[in-house]
Image (cartoon, rainbow, N blue to C red):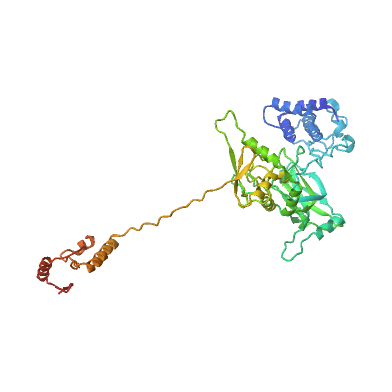
Length: 511
């Protein structure tokens, strides 16, 4: 391989398009003017770029050299067909660096490249014609509910075969006799149980990034077939944004049910996806054993409890007086009810990365992540992975000494005391019933009647005025109750006689 001086010489001849391709391949910012892009590209070489980046620089330089040579030798235009192989009499590229890596050149920019082992160091993975390593040093993030038993196919790059958007690759993996037997014997044959395997063949995808552990990440428009059968990929998350393809949630894929559990027959894997500019993906296949929340709870208990003094120190730190502040906090109230299950906690825990005192129940937290793994703290909504969970020893002591309380109070010296809620009595007044005009008049009538029975007053009669019209009768107020005198009764009787109306024993008849 050539030294950094040769790589700098190649980069100096790059145009804006080649600089953007190189920076995007290396994961750097590819926006800005040409001078800014050139400085970023030169910094890659100065800091010691990796083998894939060096190969990409040489590939871009070869494309520029081949296209310039094509224009010099065939000035007739793009319709002129060049020969397939360049004569050996042509002058080599400047600095002579490319000949040590690529050997024979072709005038076609997409022509084959010689990546034989004699030109590459054995300490680096073999690259593909696109510049991507076949087996990159990618590390998948550990999944708490799975124990990795074997690596059936190490992380492998999804390499585009052409310049099209949609690509397709084929892979093959095998099972040993012991692995096939372990999978077959792990099936749950109990009545009513699901046809699931405890030992599974697990397929995972992630970004082609070696700087840190990678989470599961599916390429766009992904489609996977195992032995001709569709793999059960997670459903895409719907999006309301126009022109944006829905993305699948990142998680592992169980392909055990569509694999050939035989050591003599290989398993075929067909992957199709849409390539993205400046972003690569890789996949891997593992043999794993699925765990339950009960197993993880036992492992959490094996880690031991965090010492109570650690929580006491955290309480004192939170309640320490700030001389610059006029408001001083003298106590903290903490609930003993789990924010997830809304019940009293049994095993109080929280992540070591959390800064709050409030805990949550470990059993409930593990059961919820077994159904849908999110590993997010229910108190502060920050990541709370399984390897960061710790049982709080101070809260364990509190639960032993306060078997019935639901809320406690921390003091400045790190001590605690139960919160006592005063009992409040609420007096509910009976609703007041408003009497209507008819009911009130009836009540007054009945009252006057009952009172007249015990007294010497005369009986009250109902007076009906027959001189009014029917229209006035509807709008007239209800008849009032009053006591009639004998003189008034005689006058009314004469009035009735003139109008042809007779009165007999408090009854009114119309003749």
